[in-house]
Amino acid sequence: MKKLCEMTQEEKDAFYQKALADYQGYKAQGLKIDMSRGKPGPEQLVFSDALYHSVDENHYKSEDGTDCRNYGGLMGIDESRQLFAHMLGVEKKNVIACGNASLSLMFDYISQCMTHGCGDKPWMQQGKVKFIAVVPGYDRHFAIAEHFGIEMVNVPIRADGPDMDMVEEIIKDPSVKGMFCVPKYSNPDGVTYSAEVVERLAAMEPAAKDFRVIYDNAYVVHDLYDETEPLAEIFTAAKKYGHEDNFIEFASTSKITFPGAGVAALAASDNNIAAIKKRLTVQVISYDKLNQLRHSRVFRNMDDIHAQMKRHASIMRPKFEAVEEILEKELGGLGIARWTNPKGGYFISLYLQGVSAKRVGVLCKEAGLTLTPVGATYPYGVDPDDSNIRIAPTFPSVEELKTCAEILTAAVRVAACE
Image: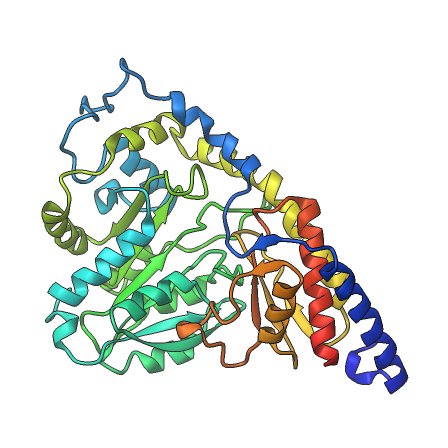
């Protein structure tokens, strides 16, 4: 297909009339479709129904005899901690199995650093606090930082992870106290950090001695294809430099079992585990051990986890491929857009070239398609290039997704001509 900028005026006029007719045709249908959030489709939720029946009145004790109906066990039951240890490639002693949401754990950890510090004075007593935000990124990470008044400094993501030259320069500022990372199948670009990037993260020498990386490994087992993209284990790399205290890793079963009703965990160094445990003795008596037990009964080892993720992939993969096929058919070769083709995770990232993403968002909304708010993938909701749109293909059906992608691509073509 000829690039839009290379078309004659007559060709451009014809192209615009076709795009406008396509768009108005969808708008006239009065559709109402939501493609705004990355959550499993309803057909995926049945894969975890066995959790309902995995614990009964005769089977409520964990392997070490703990009665999971009662108080106690602040660190979580052993089998749940061990499963997350295998998932993240760390030792069980460095894992705490918690409640249902890793986002809550991240919020709590940053709150702890703000009020009580992490190796130095509380952050709130140190003046301006800054965090590196890898962009485009996860809007809820940015919301946490904004909630605490933490100033965010953008660093773009590359094909192999964050621009480490920029990161290494920014951390020379002692007011920079940390950064947010989604190291495997990043949200929204689907990038897995290369071994070189992981090594450079591990080797970082920040000016702030209380620097912490919020290492949100949300999609650690979320492959769409049989061949996974390997991710080097961060603590193994960090120990070589004596920097294991710099990292707090998070994961959950939210998109493995039931979102909002799964198990979340964190992994950290011995020093950080001790500090977090001290805070938890004030914050909670114990987490929901029955839910941990349910999950540990159904998912006894990583083979069970991988089998579950293959079931999820069988539903999700056709959805991603349907969107990617329409993007290529309608926008390929025009020189007005590019997009990612992730091998895992939950999103496709669309980048517009010379076209306003905000205008596309308005056109989609008017046609009945709800997208992730344009700009949400950047701190403060401001995309400096007005170019990125996060596509979340997982919840609608394949047929609905085809309609979503057709509306979106028609809106892009109309906006490009405008």
